[in-house]
Amino acid sequence: MAENTDDIQKVRDIIKGTRIAMLTHVDGDGHLVSKPMATQEVEFDGTVRFIAERDSEQAQALQQRPEVNVAYSGSGSWVSVCGTARIVNDEAKLKELWSSFTGSWLQGGPENPNNILIEIDGHSAEYWDSPGNSKVTQVANLIKSKVKGDTVDGENKVVDL
Image 1 (cartoon, rainbow, N blue to C red):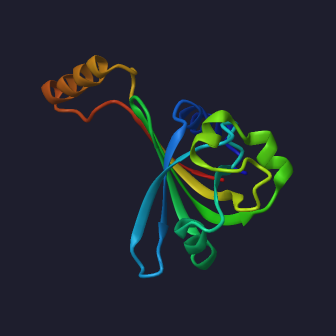
Image 2 (image 1 turned 30 degrees about the horizontal axis):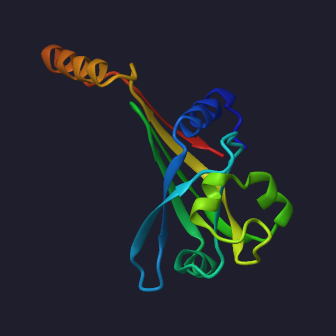
């Protein structure tokens, strides 16, 4: 885990405020494929967890090419986590993370052997954070930057995990 806890906290806060991520992997033909996924634990510690089906094309592809990117987009904040995916068979963890929301997408509950965890061990994260969370504030900052001839205020950092 990185030494800069403030930057890790910033990544954690963006992820916590944005439950749905786009998980991008490389398929068997070498094409990038993205799928929306619900993050299962929002207390980001360098690992991102999703629940999926073992027999899904995505899970199969991740076993062949585990390099992934997980992208979150919130109101004025974005984070991109690069890492390595692995399929985890952990019924106890599935029970802990399972919710009625999960049950709407996947059948059989955490006891179903086809339901698995996809864990992404993050190598690095990059975030962008714009001041102000409202669209009005963002537009005002954009106009201000154009008038002054500056760039839009905001923060961008790469965080080693």
